[in-house]
Image (tube, rainbow, N blue to C red; front, side, top):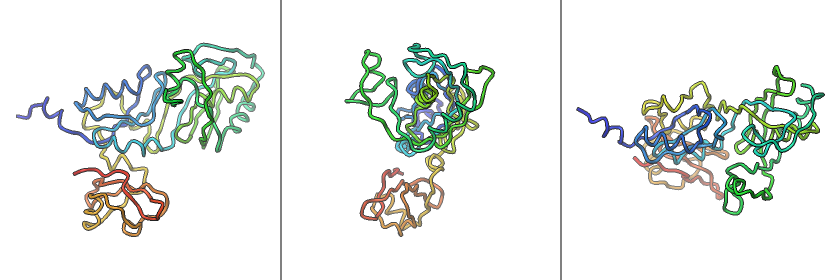
Length: 298
């Protein structure tokens, strides 16, 4: 008979697509799953604020080494922009710092303001965020009562759709954006563009790349059977299948010519064997060759 306690401690490798509930930090989720799965190597891609819900990608075992490729994927969110009030955190969790009479603002106005934020823009990260300045995270400085200068960062907003709600001062938004975009900041910037102020509430991340809320499961419903394989974790990237001779070189982490892998462009390229197992992830080098960014062991 198999000892269930022992079997649950066997090493696991893969990706979980979770639906994070409100009130959980991303770190809380990781800590919970370490206990549920009996694994030490657990990490997440793309932090969600405690009040936000939705898709959170969690890597287990060797798949934690793949998380940086998942963090880079585009994100999709839905939420509500509340006109007339600014807060310390730019969302409903903060204290109100200013109010504005914006009763005359309509849907056309809000959509015009939103259109001005679509494309390649620069954002100033909010003080309550995980961005580091001078070796300390901004939210740590904010809790200590400090406000520091933050350099704008380039981000891309692919789409920012606005719809009305039953409240004339609340508008539902759907945002598709690059990694590193703060929807809270978009809400605040919309308020300023309209001549007043605004904050965000009810934020939900509905997708990271092709990983959507439709396939996400709550933490309470997670088990080892829910794990996607490392190869499936990189399904948003074009995979390259190699023959046995090339497979041996890939397993040893050799630098190769792009023609050896049959690749071109910027990558990255998941390299798989004939059985569909992920061997490594390759990236281009300045000299035109390709190198392994990650090599998975046997």
